[in-house]
Length: 254
Image (cartoon, rainbow, N blue to C red; front, side, top):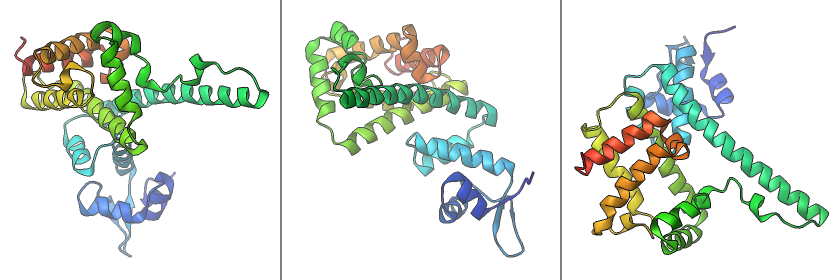
């Protein structure tokens, strides 16, 4: 088996273009392992692993400058890919549920059967925590947030999902590297997290001047740790505990 691939081979295998790979080289994101006598770029196995990470991070919604920062951090390739794999498994589960729900709807339409509303929207996650939201913060909080979500255009929803995925990935990465909860990096993530929460109408965090906003954020931090469904967003229990510690440190709750 070859341990050396041409730029054309890599572009075809990775579903990208030679132009993109040349751009990655120009900005220092992905250097070829060697240049052939004809000037063509060639890549070895290590370069392929790095390209795989670049493509995974791009799918999480990170821009090229952010990807460069992540790749520059001290972490083994295996550890970094394990974090990516955990996120992909979560996405796989969600997409499998969506596929099953759409297939069920198609079958019902073809056979003229009654629709099962409980299965039609499995995997469409924006309502999955409705009961918890209403119990903790009231029906109005859920209704306002739900109306906001339904009012977004498709590209706005996509951008919001990408933002959440990128934030979760950043938390998971920082936790995996053992970043102190009182560090500047953790504080920046906490600020980013609170800004994300405040962007959703209907929550106390949406009103940054509200006396309830801080309590709301701290309460959510406890939910992240207590509920495995939320902890999974941050790589598991340890990641959720890091998020909680960083938010508490930023808000001076320790």
